[in-house]
Length: 163
Image 1: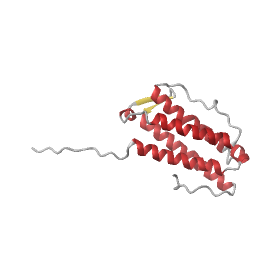
Image 2: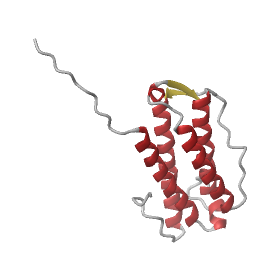
Image 3: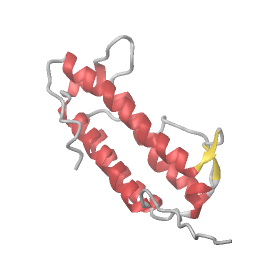
Image 4: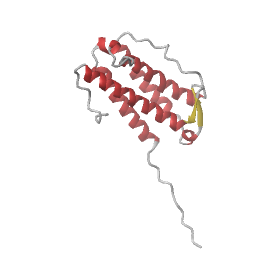
């Protein structure tokens, strides 16, 4: 009887995942920048929230969630702490949260990504699934931003230019 050792090939490293995510964040930032100030806060299509509200949601999820994962805190989700009045407020907070994401993401070990965590005390999934949700949710909302920009007659950034 012969046995063959098999090694599991890793599809993506955590560093590559973070780089991919930050590429998405860079593109979403450019979508925010593309909006005229007034329309960022007021324009919507079909009863959806204005893009400023969507950006606040994204800001309120990623950094706080990663911090919660690292610190083992299952405190509930809250958008109420950040109420921007200008596009500049959103962009400044976006950049601050980018650093928060980098800080906490890099504290999650490879093994922790497989652990189940009750995010915000209500979403009990493996950490990697939560991180993929953060990315998917951002892509989804950025798509709404693209629709808004096109409805306003504004050419959005090319979706493939993320870095």
